[in-house]
Every structure is written in structure tokens, then in C-alpha cells.
Length: 624
Image (cartoon, rainbow, N blue to C red; front, side, top):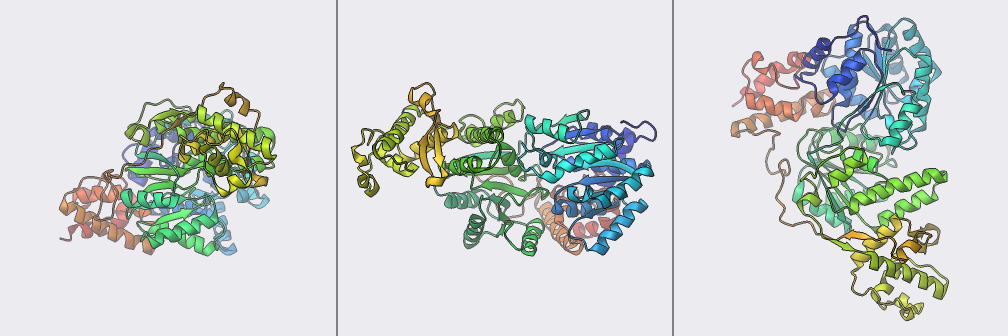
């Protein structure tokens, strides 16, 4: 229901944007979202990571609180996000708090009392807490007094079984509509395909909500996907060539691999830390805090790390193992370049990645229809990896957005050659068939490829497979080419992998169409990354890099401001970007302000921050 009395006006919301957050203009659809929600409308907001989702509920929360409409509840599963956003709101002069497991019982009680007194504008809480009888009783009290203003459900894809990070506790949030039907609700997420969007609307009973779907494009991110030969060495070369000294995230599938890769990076002189759910919680928190607060840290992690990480200067996200689907890939790569500066999304993938993901789907206890949907999502990601056209066009198309070739992905910059792998596919399938016919046994990919290529290995002779009619039939293909063909065959269901029998290969019903030549298999040629690629703007640690062009004196001021900001951040126990973003420091350095008036209008300096830091900033920039 959209309120009419005391509804915040457009001028009110814009004034809050300038006064509290220090920004002159809204970005993209932010203004339409803010005005709709501030005036009491329900909303579904799909906006890419780094697109400014938090302002879409923070400004309406402040506007509605100023209009006497009470408390906004922000529902999030992410402790890191709660801490950082509450800290940032405090820095901006907004009354905010969180309720989560990091608080003692006495601290939580004090927050609850402040909430009931009306002393808090935004309260962050996890879905498990929001749906407890105790918390709902407190919300009832606020609602009865007309002091329950808005529910903002962040990471809303978690409610959907089709989403990449399903969390059952989100399903219980239907109670909000049932119990507080007149209180506006907004669901926000960075990634949701059509199936997930429909599920969000149904599960949260937001069918009548206005949908705001932003462009999913992040043009500052360069997408590169390479065939995995030696993933660790490929990663080391990528970091050394492109991102020496930069902050980044490296995703691996297993905890063991996370620790191994982190150790290897440290041995190579890279400031790297491991992060996974098996680490002691205190150590995990220490590593996350270092990543957020220090510059140039590379976090090697499982997908347990990342959601809610607002660090703006992550220059690269690398995947050493293929994710489960495009939604997960997009969400994870979106953690790079939130400041809008050039960043890289780099992934190495191989046959084993496809085998592993297929095996996990096949072994899952889920219903067949759900498994089939997961296979479709994996196939879409593999199609992105194997694509020979623009990566960005493919990626955006998955989310229903048309686009043109970007000129900023590996395929646009270095177009790969294409070859018809149908003949190779038929030879592999024929070999699998003849192996089983001759020995009644199934074998793995390596052995099958050895036979096709005519390699007389000990295993080949042991089983007499050199006598097969297909022995050496594909001698003209490289192992790399045959692995690419097998990836495609497994992805399209023409070859099955038996996880219970040492990942041996089996024919399927779909094999027949390929063998008959009814289905073609098109593949990209293996293309090595050029070794003379120029280092990109923003990369490297040899000198201080600023987000905008600065002269020598400006760079000195910028470096001094960053050092000052680091000290303030340590004192406040907050990440440096919560005090000021790099772009704000660079703008200050460029202007070289001498008076308070000179600081007026610089983006990112709101009234509270001007009051708190202006004199210190002026002292820093005046030092010769």
C-alpha cells in the first residue's frame, strides 16, 4: 500500500542523498526505486554488485523515519555486511544497529531496548532472528504504535531453490506479509534469472511489487576464460603480469585446495590468506578483517567467502575451479572493481571441472526435475566458457539482456579460431563402446584418449586395447583437443561419468545422435594468452595509482590522504573505504582545498563527515 500522508517528497530523498551521503546525483534507477519505496511501495530490485543497492533502502529508511514512520528492518545473512554498513551509517550520522551472534546477550538486549524506544533508524538482522517469536512480538509492539516503517530483504535470491545460494530460513519470511501486510517490503539481489525471480516473488508474496531490473553489465570488468593446463602456474602468471600488489579473490572448490594455493602464493611473495568454513571462526574473522582493512591482500577462498563484501578496490577475481552456474559466477566476479575502475574476472577450467560438477548433481538426493534444472544451468556456464563470441553478450543474454560485443573480453580482444570436433567426438564415443564390448569394463578419460591417439601405454597393452579397431584412429588430435571434445560430450549428456566406479566413462541415450552425425560438436581452438599484454591502468604496485589523473603534487597529497585514512580506520575499527572511498580522496587531492568551502560539493563528503574530518583533511593536504 502506498502512503499519501506524510509521504517523503522527491526533494526530501535528494536532500538526504546530498546531506547524509555526499552525492550530488542518483545513479541509474536509484531515484525511481528510492521514491517508490519511500512512498510506501513494494519493490523487487535487481541491481549488479557495486550498483548501489544499499542506498535504495537506506535513503527511504531515513526519509520515512524523518516523516515519523519509524524503524526499517534490513534482513541479511551476512555478519560482515551488517558490521560494515552499520559502521558506514554511523560515519554518515545515521542511527543504525545490528543484532547478530557477535553481540553478547547484554549488548543484544540494549539494542532491542533502543529499537523499542524508537532510537534506531535501520536495524540489520538475520532471517533466523527476525522470525523468532521474541523478535516478532517486539515487531508487533512497534507495528501497533505505527513505528514499523519498511522491510528490506537483502540477498533475496536465498529464498529460491533455483538461486545459487538457497537458504531455507529465508522461506519463513512469508510471515512478514501475513503479519504486517500494510508495511512496505523490498527484495534486493544482484543475480537472479527468470526462474529465480518468479520464485522470489511467489515465496515472499511480492506478486504486486514493482520490479526494477537494472542492466547487469559491468563494463569495467574484463572477462577471460582459459583452458586449465597447470592452474596454479597459470594463476601465478596472471597475477604477476596483471595484478602485482593488487587486492584480489581466488576461488577454489575445496578447502584443501584453498590452503594449498594460499601457501603457494605466499611462497611466490604474494600477500595471500586462506578462507573456508573449516578454519577456526576467529582465524576466519581475522583473515576477513585483514582483507578488508589492508591493501593488496589476496584472499584464497571457497564460496563461503564473499557475499556482503563491499571492498571497492578488489582488482581481480580468479576462479581455479568452475562454479556451478552463471548466477554464482556472476555474483563472485562482481566483487571485482566495485569502484568502477578496470578489473579482471579470470577463470581456468578443464575436463575435471565438468566431471566434478556433473557428479555432484547426479549424486544429489534432489528430485529429477531439480537435477535437470541444475544440469541446464551448468550447461549454460560451460557454453560461456567454450564460447568463441563475446563473453559479455553471452553473460548478459543469460539474464535476458541484449547487448553488443564489448571489446573488453578475451574473445573480443583475441578472437579464437574454431574447429569442428564432431569427427573427434564420434571416434571417442566409438572407442568407449568398443572398450566395453571387448572387455565388459569401463575406463576413465585418460585411457580412452590414449587409445584414440594410439599410445601404447602399459595399461593399454595390459588389456589388449591396442587391438581395438579404433586404436590410433584419432592420432591427429592433441590431448588438449580431445579433452575439449569430452567436456562438450559430458556437458551435453552424450557421455556419463560413473563416480562410483573411479570416474569411468559410459555411453548414454544421447550418444546415438552424435554417433549418427545428427548433432555437431563445435569447439574453440586453444589460444594461449599473449605474453606481451600491456599492464592495465590500476594494476601494479610500483607506484601509487589514483582513480583520476593527478600531477606529481596531487599524487603526494593522495598518498598522504590514504595514510591518514588508514590511521582513522584503525582507530574506528572499520575498513578504510567506510571513512572515504579512493575516488573521494582523489577528488580532494586534485582540488587541494584550503578552506571548508573548498571541500563543499566533493562527492562522498556528507554533512557529518565534513564536520568530523574537514579540519584533519585540510591539515593533511596543506603539508608540503
